[in-house]
Image 1 (cartoon, helix red, strand yellow):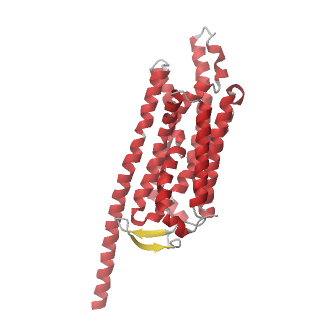
Image 2 (image 1 turned 90 degrees about the horizontal axis):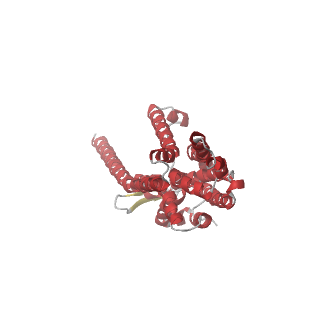
Image 3 (image 1 turned 30 degrees about the horizontal axis):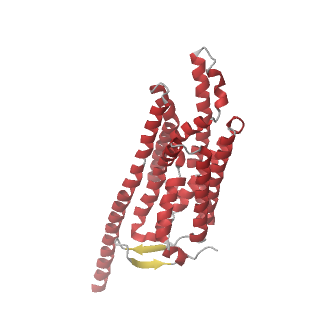
Length: 340
């Protein structure tokens, strides 16, 4: 049974904290592809494409064989990362119609199933490597579902809304550290399949947490002061007149932001996919050195989680100053009207 809005509001801090943790572990984990690629190659995914390299006299042909394995795995990454970006508009439409609860339940289930698919593929990579395509597609879809639904939680924090939005986005960006962390566990001796089974179990806990705590209805909007004290709860969705959807998306500021984000995202995805190949060519295919650099890259992603709340708090602070100025102007206008 889904909780009411009032019950969800009383649990908002639990939901926010768990959403940050869930974003770190499940949202855009494909951004840590460089570490996953090393593990997939170690497990033998598409290794049959490189059979000729030991017996091949021609070194050029050997490198082509090796790169073809990388190309197939990077193609699977392309499918998953494409869904991380391309699915956003359909997800927004679905969430507006059905609410965040159902979408989050679907996303966590898809993520758990993706882990099971990778584990099953790792049990017989010579025959089941193709499953990596379906697994990464489900991984990207499920992760984006959890990311999008978590962005509705800040509506319950009033004047701290921007801070919590920034925190959710920061945890999304920092999820690139997940696969480097998993690779550390893998290097310590844990089997790849057991890691994925545990991860799938954790995704089931996300499903359970959402089933217990997330309401069916849209999250309420509340007004909080900067100290976190409740000023004015509104137990129904805020209804305000606004300009049309088409007018909004064709506004210059939106189009410019859209182009900037598209170029930035494309550059990021290209960098993620090509980083291992570039590092291997620079280090003479020294996988230990490549592993060190990919781990450093993953750890640096945590800076997003550190800096984003500061940016969000500054935005909340400035927005509150603007609201205070508007309130003062309104009061002055009212006083002037009364004295006339």
